[in-house]
Image 1: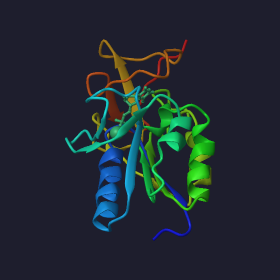
Image 2: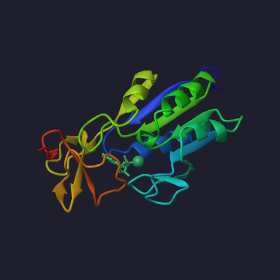
Image 3: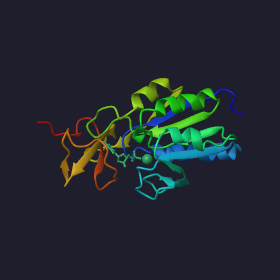
Image 4: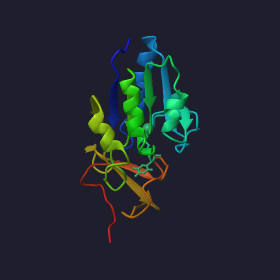
Length: 189
Ligand code: TMP
Ligand code: MG
């Protein structure tokens, strides 16, 4: 069905519904009788390794991988739709992998954080966003004021994290909140 491949990106802060939207697109592709494979980095083991999960409880089977290159190796020859969640966690070769898939005629649906807890672009997301045919930026709700949230607040012992803390720290609502620009705090010395 997909003669020309394409890259679609779903991005935004934590709790904005990225995985929910990814699962929605996957379910629709399955209804359309397309052959779909879902991938994720093994690093994110929040709810079990072989699934992707939305914060609202939706779930879908996924192949967990240690490196981006494994996506090509694990790709079924019949696959026409490849969905990849938590794309920000993959090594930089993810950019070439996604391009290769799209150039082979595959519809690639990627979901991930555009910004890390510091408000800086996350991993290879800038490269992927620029190469994508379609980008959807979702917003969560700021837990402080109720405005739309574009940032993710990391909390360490209920205090804002420091700028030089490690970028990768797997977690959910015990460590992170959605916040608007005004209420997003990063401690800098
Ligand atoms: P989510 O966007 O599907 O909610 O998951 C984002 C994951 O990324 C979650 O495990 C927390 C992690 N994360 C980091 O490792 N560093 C960060 O700076 C942020 C904001 C999230
Ligand atoms: Mg998610």
